[in-house]
Image (tube, rainbow, N blue to C red; front, side):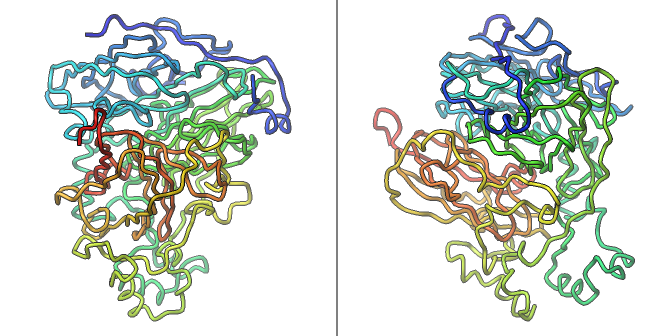
Length: 583
């Protein structure tokens, strides 16, 4: 059993000042209001005006070698409405866990629920028995029992943790984790703020899933109207009819929308105006985590360029941008150099049905203009994997989309409504709805690892995995097979070097996550490909990554859109032999 909850954390600080140009050049230095909820941990409140040198008692920051977490149901209030959340230590989000690279940690998790629970340490490299996925790496934490996770901390960076049981993640069981480097941090900054993006609905997630099964567009309140059809900015009636014959909706960007979701920053709605304070002249590091269940966000800070220095916990060469499309379960660290005024932190849902909002400010109580929601995007032929077939007869096109000629490994069945005829590499694309914005948008091809990739061996083979689904039936799968159908696991030999190609045959964006490993995105930066654990795969496109299967055991591999995972887009990656030569 773990000991008392320790508090205390160390944050690396620097006194250097810089202007916008030196921010880009020096971000990586080699060598050297009413919250709307009564459950906020101290770290998630509007931040103090002094520099943050450590975690004081009562801040909701846990560190040390022994940590205790309690999972329970607690009332959660937002905008005057109250429901039950699943919380850790009584807060939403959960406490910030702050560790140091090279230490050992024991985390005792007690489940006070009347159902099984679990915690998965998202992005951490650890023994598979400690990964926290019931039925795969351990049996789960039974009601009113305690499970002790124990593992060495092998990395630094920004990560998070969440339940992998049922749909508990959607009702509050998630929290941030920051691991400080053992020695020198190449990122120079004076202050930091952790920003956890999430979504919240007063409709229970099981009810949301039932609605999607009965009517997949139930939450899509942004479908085209007659007025839209008559405007010059919409499809004409003939084009709409052709889409209708294919049972596809160009406005189907997100399954669950602002029709039921409120979008939160650190557990607070837009009206609460979470505020991160700074002193003018400081470099401020923002550790941004998308801990939502179903929402991909477009994040920007109008008037304030962001320098991306870390992706999924791994340092990257600094790249300046104005907007980031951040998939569910991705993390990005950015460094900003604000002037003596307020700035709006604006996280717009990808379908533009709502937003999370906070403020960076030199003084409490300040705010900046909140941008209006932009026009909702629509899908194109490119998003269906057939941008080069725009002039093709739609009857023939539909047959081509379903015959599986380009996907011989896919099992065609009622759960597969299309196969993309001409998928293309879309890692250089800006993201859905961002093609025509008049500022810079981060793309995967911008990312370059700060350090050389650790494994330069020749690849042994390439495998292709198709992301498949049937939106009308709300069925999601890999290669046409849902996890409930007892699919064969994806098998790798231990230390095998392999290339994986993910082909998205659906009209939806899918953030795909592999447990226990980092993979290198094949994005043109040979030898310095960015290392990630989660990647957004755009509709009608593909991504490729190189993987060294150096972690023996059984690992979850899934779409991190929670409803997609539970509807079947999940499998097991098994790496053998285990330690000791066991098969």
